[in-house]
Picture 1 (cartoon, one colour):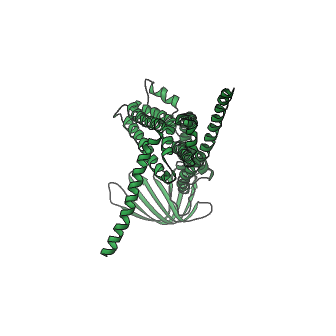
Picture 2: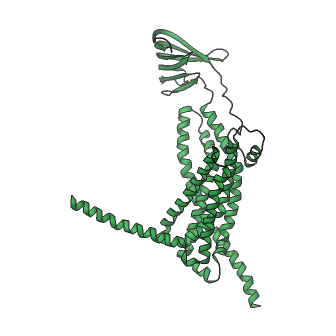
Picture 3: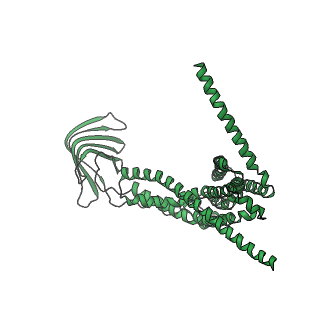
Length: 411
C-alpha cells in the first residue's frame, strides 16, 4: 500500500513540476518576444514615416504596414526568445540548487527537460503555420500597401517645398503653395520628353485639369526654360506665359496578383509549383524556399537540447558568457542555413543538400551535448568552455592595466 501510494504521488508531483517549469518559461518568453518585436518594429516604423512624408498618405497606413510586418519579425525573434527563456529558467534552477534537489530524488535531466521539449514541439507547429501560411499573406499585404503609397495616383496637388513625381518624367516643386496645393510660387519643373531634357523655372504657376479630367495642365508665368536636346545645342527660352500638359488619371496602377515571388506562396502552393510541369519561378528557388521554411520550423524542438546543458553549466557570473556563446552558435547556424539557401537559389548545389546538411549537423551537436549533460552532469562540455572564456577574460583584464601603466610611464 505504501509503495502504491508513493507511485501515485510521484506522477502527480512531476506533472506539477511540468506545469511550474512551463509557467516559469512562458514569462521570459513573452517578455523577450515583446521587447524584440517592439525594437524591430520601431526601427521600421520610423522608416515608414519617412516613406509617407515623401509620398503622402494617411497615418493608418503606417499601422497597417507595421501590423503586416509582425509575422515576419515574430519568425525572426521566436527561436532566440525561446532559447533565452529556457536558458534563464535552467540557470535559475541551478543557482537556487533546485536542479540538484530534483536530481537527488532520481529525476533525470531528460525528464526535467520534457516540458521544454513539449513547448518546442508546440512552437514548431506554430512556426509551420506562421512560415507556411501566415507570412506569405502578410508579406503580400505589406507589398500591396507599399505599392499603393509609392505608386498612388497623383491628385494634381503639390505640397510646399516637396518634389512631386507627376509621372512620364515630370517633376514639380515650389517654394510657396496655397492651401489648395494648386497655386504655386517660385516653381521649378524638370521634364523629359521625346529625348530632350527640359528645366523650367517660373515666378508663379497654377495647376489644373481639362474638363474631362484626362490631362493635367500647369500654367506658368514669368519664367525661363532650358531645353537640352540629345542631338543639338541647349536652347534658352524666356516666356511670359507657358502651359505644360500631360495625361492624367486618378486611378492608381493595380498591384500584381499574389505569387509573383516565391516568398508569397504558402507551403502547399510551393509544393504544387515544385511538381508542376511548368513554372515561372525557377525550381531551385522554389525548393530552397520550401526546405528553408521547414528547417527553421523543425529547429525549435532542438533548442531545448542545447539550452538545457548550457543553462546547467551557467552560474550567476556565467550568464553573460552563456548568452554570448549561445548567440554565436545560433548566428552561425542561421547564417549556414542562409548560405545553403542562397547556393540552392542559384543552382550551385541541390537546395535540399545546402539546407539539411547544416540542420543535421546542428541536430547532432545538440543531441550530443544533451546526452553528455544527461550521462555526466558534472562534466558538462559548456562548463569547461565557460571556465576557459572566464580565464581569458581575466587575463585580458590584467593585461590592460599593465599596458596603461607602461604608456603612462613612457609619457
